[in-house]
Length: 103
Image 1 (cartoon, rainbow, N blue to C red):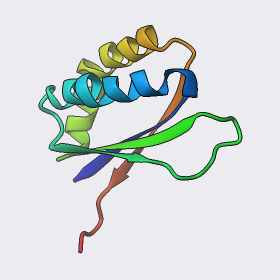
Image 2 (cartoon, rainbow, N blue to C red):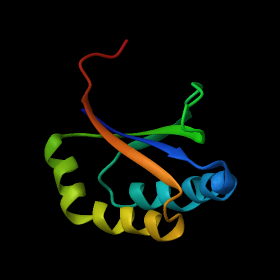
Image 3 (cartoon, one colour):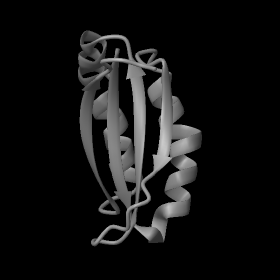
Image 4 (cartoon, rainbow, N blue to C red):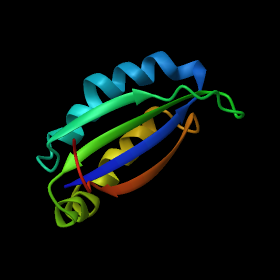
């Protein structure tokens, strides 16, 4: 299994609106692709030098192939929606992780 992690730093001026959109629209839209089993959203508790508030969203998927199909079929549209709603108000980076063991 794989984890697709998206870490985002959002400006405080749009934080509340962004958080509602993430919970009610964006994460459900990503899950609706059928390519992920679940999602966990966590607030990062380290204060950022650049300001803003940071979050990590981890999506679990069954395989690298499923993740690649998400990138090809869904990611551009979903990322564009975020940029249209919150232009120049956030930065994100993505990390892929393979689950080695669970206890």
